[in-house]
Image (cartoon, rainbow, N blue to C red; front, side, top):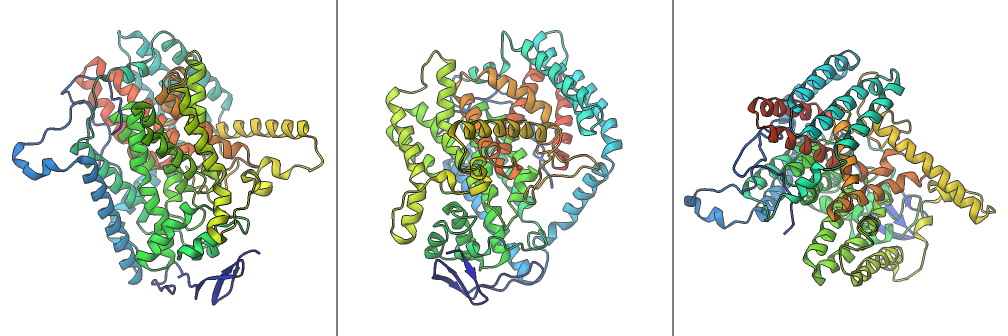
Length: 622
């Protein structure tokens, strides 16, 4: 039986879940309803400090030079502060700041005021600055691009190493290609430009890959210091501000598409019944309901509390991204990746929504990558148990993130074929991956069992009906014909995904929060970061024989799967792809900064720091 919703009662499958369901209008005051890793940092000189990697201010300023491998040493007289470990210190700070921000939002909402209205002047100023550039993008971008090309060549070209000239030349050519792709003028020239950039990078890394140097240089552990905790805390604050400012006024509507399920989340018995599988959107996964239950329990059951559940998940996705990126490519790449996700337009949109929980899908994927790498390194049974549990956990979320269960499978396969048919762990540990896959498959029967004690076996691949490629095919088609149609459609969708990243997103849905830049077509990835992501992705593929890289590439492959096997490759169905590409873009910038530092010229370092700061400032506009 589908969900029913009357003014007085919400019931699903004939069972009353919650009475007197009242969702407040956005502009009305709120009423109520009843009721240790292994990082791989940069190959740099100990104790040296280079250009600012990120800058901290009202939008995205963190004046930081992540060029020291040593932890920051605090004076001895600080006393008890030296006893506090950095990770718990950061976790405590993030929890307190997030709760305080949400509480202030609730107070403003009850008073009929804009949530966090005291930030409005600064946010408006930033918006005006961005709009002044974006509204005239057709005129401004042709002026900015030549400056960027000259700057990249100025800071990058040198006599030695010669390979770096090809890398920076490729970045310059890719930025030139962006001009033709952005303005849709002679797109063929843009495609040719990216092809030339690919050839240049290929020749640059044919004999030596700078990413190998980054991964090889560290011999000892680079501990997460209190200084790192401060920087990550600052990025967390930025992510929080962008996700909760004016949250009770923007979005300025309540769609209510998932209202029965959202209301069911206000009680634990209600959420397990609602998640059983009734209706077109179920099962949404328990990871959708639990944050709503938390925020409605803390802040009353209002529309604002419903949106705060998405915001909190979005904020605490940042440290997951940080620690994974740090494990793959070091401290600086981790800070940049965390900042990019904090300012990712799609992720911000999904962190302010009361509709579908696309923002919930990223942290389970990042967590699975982290525990999988840790299990390979530590070789402990307990860590492999965590891998199994995290693989099973990926089922209990929105379908666009469920494919993350395949990350260990894809990563192991990549490593296996590129390392002479050897695995990064003992053959017996494949049993753990098999157990995790089985735990994922029984997630649907467990959803039934949670609700009413029945353990019914179902096919998890047929739940989305015609939204899946195979769901809309005629039943009388043969197996071979069905397979050929699915393969052909999937290949077409891969092309659409690539086109949406580099040229134009043709299939944009109302839950895809893409920036509109002047009269230019929306894209799913910011053009400022695209050349760096492109260059880094080539290097990552070239370095895929390393397990850290294989895991990141495995995540990208798994993230694409829900989109290419859908009837349309909407960006929302690739929800975990864009944070993964943010990590790749951060690695690309890290590689460029590595080459700049090796030149050792202070003027180059200053220019690079200024360019990076300005680029991050305008990041959200694109």
